[in-house]
Image (cartoon, rainbow, N blue to C red; front, side, top):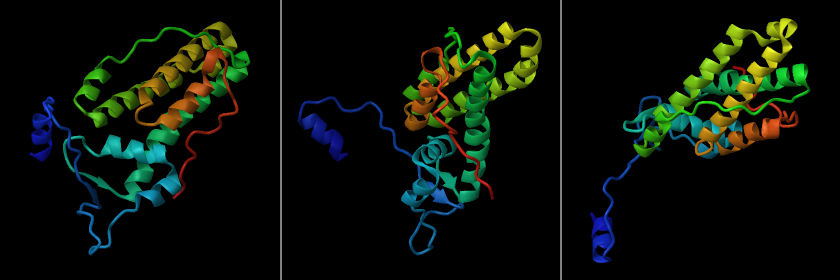
Length: 210
């Protein structure tokens, strides 16, 4: 009430809508010092890095409802989504381009994900990331289906063409992830910059062993 009143008194336009983020619970309960279940975000970031924590909160805490955080669920999502899906996809694509074409690839045009703009405008960050990682799933599936390591034996140019497409898709995905995972996006863009694989970036997300 106070903020709109202050805006009106100053002759400024009041907001037409306000985004209010939900509560983050711990193991199904509200966080409370008396319960001893308060999660220290700085400790989690120190252990796992800021991008993985930011990703989990924006992907798995619904944009319009309360969500839950616990370490087991976080580590499961980290390994499945970041280490196995995104990280492994980047590593495999880069390694095969280095092996079969000295790291060189053609920069080709790829189709954009237009639905993402709607998710951003409606503050549906969980849906946005779900869409991006569903596309990453499809890219991993394309690798298993096309088997570029076998294709390279019979038709090297087609294998390189396929891998070039993957590199460009990953570049586009990195650009989509900039608002959510800026450090990770920068590393991916550095890996596939200017049509040449940069092998100095290293592993994006080392797996967490239980």
